[in-house]
Length: 109
Length: 113
Length: 245
Image 1: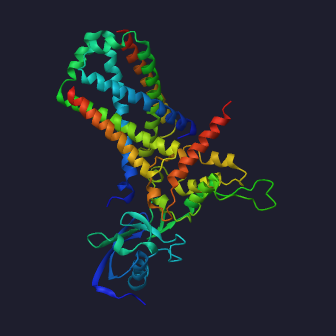
Image 2: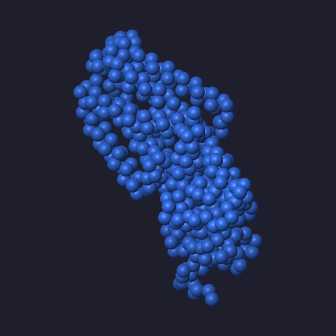
Image 3: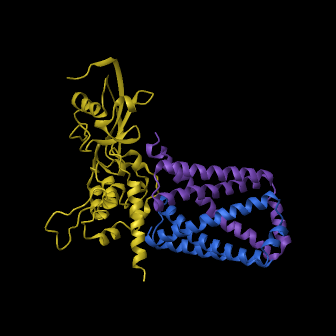
């Protein structure tokens, strides 16, 4: 991959290492006590810290995942070039849109 | 005959890292869609979550959480080599530790769910 | 001159014949003490089939010419004892190095491999105004230690054969070329680091390495191209951060 894509992917990897650690801890905590929608939403509703954290998480993932997939597709399939880059850019946008929508949903519900 | 390069620790690590990454990339949009059902209110999310209480789904969830933990641990291995000049023996210990801690924690937690 | 055959035991050897298309041919030769794979191939070629093609030169682990894949792993045949690698079934399987074009049988075309050294700027650049006298480079400096860790490469191709990324991407420069570039990045006398760092970066450059580490595992000179390539990744990143306005 290009130096720029590499840098973006490694940088978001550092961000995600932290975010995933926190997210996993949160999941464990939630699962431990049983998981109802009411419980989740009570904690996330109007919670600015939650919004910022998961917003950043979504942005990082939307950059990190498509770059990784690009490597896999280029190395394991014959697909490469502009069409691949375009498809993955669209996937990135989709992840960003769906992710921010989910964060917003849980913040405002 | 399997080529020797495919029997190496590093190759196995990279393969698990890659496969877990693919699984997570496929799962993530679904995860976002599921959470967004909350837009229709808590009841909508609840009724969706009720679907997830079946054993096969819980097993899939466990696999996904394991995939996330594995992908992170192995990603940390790569970052350690690339940015912190870690060398092999330290790496093996590092990956093993992270994976063990996460694995144990996850197993424990999910059993209590 | 030849070591006595031990107990008239036979060694069964399957050897690749042909080019990319071809097949394995089975041979059997007496098992001898301290036999190396090079001994095996030489005996077969001289006594049984003069049409078998293979390479060797020094016979003593200095030149790297005899590299080939032995039971699935790339090795120097002159430094590989039969007793160390023969399978439980008493069979040996000899193939040409992977990721190279096969010329014939066990001999491969090395041109692309060395072209990639050039592409990676794996050569010293004295600059437009070469120094008039010897440079003083302390061996204990970090740069020289980094260079020395990779400087012993003799271009045998074992790492290139083992590399999965080379197998997946024909344009990938590969561990040997990148390792050589790293030794030069650490050469304080060199005058064209900018061009070199550009050359080793990009879709076929150092960033394509996924840290499988087969190169490091199999290098007969115990060089670790993985760590050299990691060094290149850091060097390229540092330079790109400095250039940012």
